Length: 312
Image (cartoon, rainbow, N blue to C red):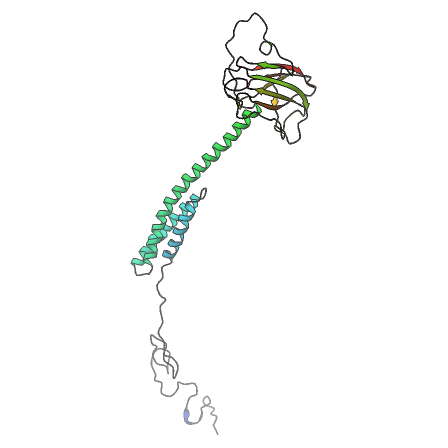
């Protein structure tokens, strides 16, 4: 049985210390008394070998990023209005590619990928320049088309410049010429020297619809029907046969477009043929009569003839 001594701590039989180092381990520096010195690698456990530390393999993420940015730079740079994005991606691809080449020279892999990304970045700069010129050409083309559309509308509704045949040289005449020096009534025909005839049939009241153009009209209008007969020996171009009209107060009226009216003259009228057009004008409320001028078109030798009468 173990003995307890008053002079010291409990001592097992034989004097062995249960908290001391295991048998067979020497004393030495490193981990304190009873432990040997440490080593560079894990010593392992009893029955298992130790293992060394494995360093991660080298990489070159800059080369991968340069390749991706270069591809997108070429694709985006050629897109109109997005060329600036392609230029930014191209600059990034060149910078990343140069960095990837420097890393590859230091021993990292993917040198070829870094070179390809740099080259694609340079190509992306060229693609962005091409995209800029494509955008500029597209904007110019759209601007020309829009300007042409507005010019056509202005020519039709009287807001812009219209063709006005020059007045023939005045000739002294001892008598009045109906249709030239005085107005013809509705339904009468004016005949030019070469046989071309222009007849203004009638002028009737007309109410423009809600969707008519221009929208700022008075809500009151008049429709005038005109017939051109070519009794000459040459074709006449009636495309420019556009009328001018004034209300009974002398104010210039404005063409109004409402569905099927006006029916403008188009193309040419051959000898022996005729064409009919319908013109609609917006007039102030209470207008009773209309003054109307019309020429058959080209050539310019035809001057305008004059009609006037009540709105029926």
